[in-house]
Length: 149
View 1 (cartoon, rainbow, N blue to C red):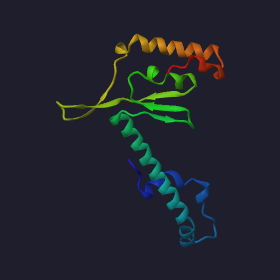
View 2: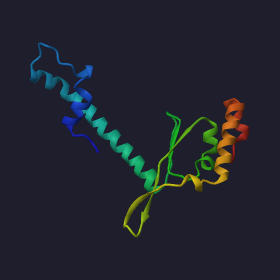
View 3: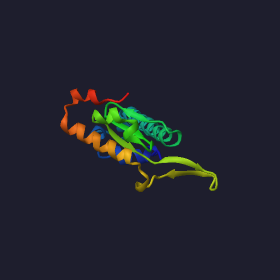
View 4: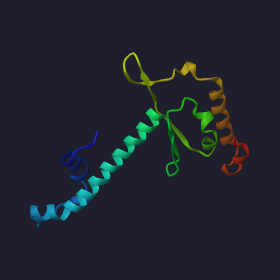
């Protein structure tokens, strides 16, 4: 949910030093001075919120993966992340797994598919242990020897 302008101002701008009113300024000068700054901040807030929402929709409903190099994180709805992202995990990426949304024809709506911990295959558990052991015993530069193609 995107905040409207007044809610955004109350949440992010009221205590912010960038928006502090000087004692001798009138309200009109204050609003004129900060309207461009506020509009710019609000525009980027909406843009970032919508982008995050699109990423979530693409990952959950369309079953794509989001790999972010800056934060070294992977957002996925894959049920076998250790197998799929083995090489990334060796390079210290973090996997953020969110529930996959599937269409339930009886309810006629999308529902989250939450995998039971009892149904996780042994291969996933073994891969997690293998990745942990490799990361513990080898330097990052030498981990290329363990990559899978």
